[in-house]
Length: 221
Image (cartoon, rainbow, N blue to C red; front, side, top):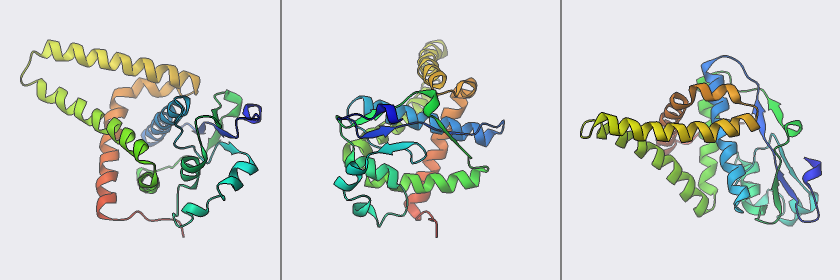
């Protein structure tokens, strides 16, 4: 991580893994972590960094004081890492670190209920993101829902062979993108469950959206 700092690069985004177990919740948590990493690494490479994970994030003291630390979002009780990146990161001062020696490993949520509460807090923080980041992240989620919903509907109106071919092409692309990323980030065993995990995560995220719409998530005391 330290090697990535330079005269121009003052913010480094790293990968924060979770310890692997064989439980379904653990595989789902690690899949969502991998997906999130693919997204924030990709956005950073495209010159529009939007978040990082506090488990593996580096920034210089001068960068921290330039934005007066966390003062502008001190009233928000979670997501200080994301919101700091939203404020401080630019296309020129931010770098990513994909060296496996830089990965950190943390204890994961152990139950679906625990993870659900954690993700509700994280999602509530995203409402403070810049509009363009909210828009494109929301578009990604909606496009996935629309794809699966449309695929199911079209099976009733078109040849199942044609729809199956399109579905197979999509899944091949999905396996290629996630497969390469999972190999780079040492999460290879996740990809065997990929289609099921993606569908379950979409339903899970939709449930979080509904829950946050009608009630505020609980925060640490």
